[in-house]
Length: 435
Image (cartoon, rainbow, N blue to C red; front, side):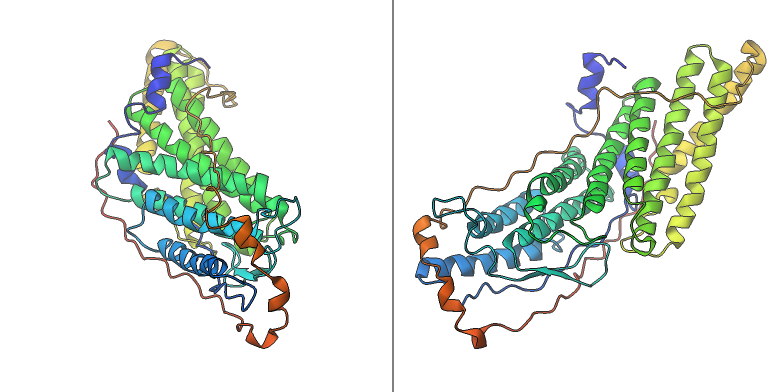
């Protein structure tokens, strides 16, 4: 499909992502799994840190880690604050991962500290690894989850500014970029591979990447509708988004049902919802091309997909599993499509009875559409530069032989307490509609 430069410019949002009309409908629109929980880490190495500068690194690791964890549940936190808190901790943590002695050997501090983290799908049963890379990927994973929750929170506001609307779109792409970077670069470095069903295993992290891209594209679709782009563009974008949701669902189909069923129901209902959109707008394209019989069949298929999406919304609400429960079928953006399908189908049937007299095919039209523009690509994620505190000279003052003799001074095992996430009640939908 070829789009003009003007259409491309609008879809990419040069003049802003979208007005309030869509964002109002996004309270309770997204399913969100819980944040990961972790045990406190003191970074007290009892004699290993052999200089004031080494001790300062340990103290700063403890305080920057604690601050970053606080930011995950602080409702005043925004992407700028989150990035600063993340950079502060990761710039120091890399001093325990990157080689600092001029060789290519493993950093001697990488395996000194044990880290415990829960997983988003596995309740409060933690995994533990004595590996700073495990800490890096687990914390960064939580940062990505925070960006998805921030996007959801912004989308649930009653009056969303253009800047906030852009934040929704960008935050989802940032989250996808973090997940992708962890999968491609850092998780392969783990000595102990992730267990099945844990966050760091390929099926789970792939599903998160794809879901973030699909949700970002939902914003693009809403913008295309708001700007009254032609039906062919909207149908193609909806079809691509439906395919994303289907791919995410299939990625999870071999996970244990008790931890994945609810999430999968959400992915399935979104896939059907956007297939309904694709068939609805493809029907409009067919009608405009005087293919009224095919248009009717496309709209009938849209009606079927929409009805199945409604049924899945009920099943999703009744399915037990991790995460917050979205309520898509109560949103105007969802309800609006049902009315649009009905109205367009009735128009096609009227036109066919008066003008075209076309036979309605038994099979729905093949949706072989490719959106050339408007697809959401992950924002590349890069770790911050190594902290200036982490020099080879300071690194040399960490002496692992000193700590091994002082077993009695080792701290007790810290337990992992669940994250108490803020209970955010979205503001009331104003009832404004897509024009």
